[in-house]
Amino acid sequence: MNNPIISVVVPVYNEEEVIHESYARLKDVLERLQESYELIFVNDGSRDRTAEIICDICADDPTVRLIDFARNFGHQTAITAGMDYAKGDAVIVIDADLQDPPEVMPEMIAKWREGFDVVYGQRAKREGESLFKRFTSAVFYRLLQKLTDIHIPVDTGDFRLIDRKVCDALKSVKERNRYVRGIISWLGFKQVGVEFVREKRFAGETKYPLKKMLRFAFDAITSFSYKPLKLATYVGIIVSLSGFAYMLNVIYLKLFTNATITGWASMMSVTLFFNGVVLMMLGIIGEYIGRIYDEAKGRPLYVVREEVNFARAGWRKPVAVQANPTPYSLAA
Image (cartoon, rainbow, N blue to C red):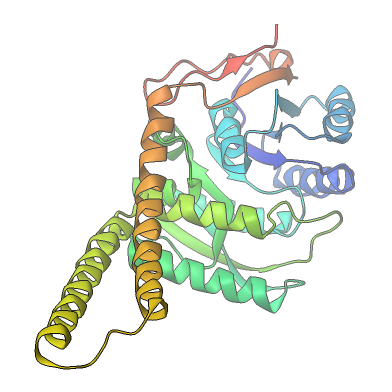
């Protein structure tokens, strides 16, 4: 069987309310392309009926495949797994919540056929998002661009098309705390954006609450910049100089004036401030050390419990690559 021209990777987590609609819209767009394709759903340890629904779809549609994780490994890991398994000449990543409209995919494919290796979706407008979410997203993307030495386009997500050679290059990247859109920018290649309006979530709840957004932001910054470590050095120098100046002031007051150094309030305030700064700097350093420890363990990036419709398509398991440990599978 010939490899599909287009592979569409859809990471899903607790999306039972939207799967049928997502499948219908993706299928409609792909059928109109009149190209061979495969639709790969990656179930990231959902606790609802998401996997069961996709299995039912797979039974009726041989172009649909399912990678079912043994547990929740995270959105970026699910995207990575989909790319590991995808066999298309071009791979499109899109979330199942339909905030990124599938109808933009033909425009991405047209840009790819013009010769671009990466075509990323760029959000011209965000529907249904709070002012806080829009503000923090805008700050994050621009801060990340200032901190890194590579160009990561602002107002972009993981909704993008990548060429087969980009997908193959991505497999050689070792990182475990992954920020896929940043890695793709780091790889280089010829890139272009396609603007679209980000729609309201079709159903269900966001899978990126504030806690996960902050974790994601830390992963992005620490994966592509060591400037926070430089900041720790600079702040340490400033705090040390401030403390030394304060000590000289205390000595002067003691030796040359009759002024008394008042009680514990001022001393405790200064001590707590300096200790707080030190702990904050240690926290930044700890983030980097934690990532080194995570990389050193060498565990598989993800564990697959079941693969559906891959054997039916004459598909073979990915060959082990040195940088990205072979995805361990419990499937027969």
